[in-house]
Image (cartoon, rainbow, N blue to C red; front, side, top):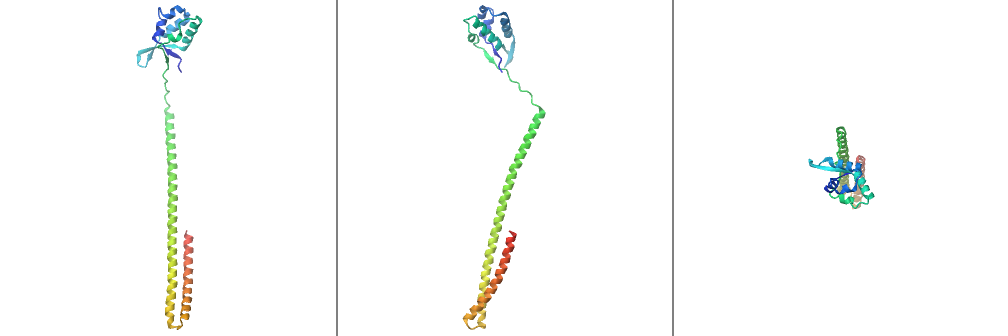
Amino acid sequence: MASSLIAGDRLVRALGPGGELESERLPRKLREELEAALRKRTPGPSGPRDPRRLVPFRLIRDLHQHLRERDSTLYLHELLKGSEIYLPEVVKPPRNPELVARLEKIKIQLANEEYKRITRNVTCQDSRDGGTLSDLGKQVRSVKTLIITIFNFIVTVAAAFVCTYLGSQYVFTEMASRVLAALIVASVVGLAELYVMVRVMEGELGEL
């Protein structure tokens, strides 16, 4: 926090011998403190080669109050031409090595936890995707098997009907008897195939 200003040449000349403040009859204590502050040099940004005269705000306020009480025609803002507010450089305290190491360790732990969280989500998503594709593949295979089974059932029943119809000509002379015999044999074969097909489908459904 600023508590002083860098005295400009105007203020230095006014406090010097024959200066403008000589006729203002400054209190002895105030003059001595101002002159002591101007004699004290503070190194500037360039080091000792660039000294600066620092005057505390308290002395500036006392000077302003004295000029107002005397109804002086010399105004403070005129004396402060060329002066600047002094902002001391803030010196950062050294960091505790143990604290720095602890903070770095915490950062690494947080980064590892974040990485594990991200990779866990990706793994779960991949597993879900893989499970969906696997289920879809099983369903496709089941439908394919069902279609093949139905096709085999139709072919088997039709073959049984045709074979019985053609073979029964040596037993029956009438067409109605031959057709009836073929229907009976085809029905028996169809029921047997249907039984086998149902058992197969039950087994596949049990695996799903």
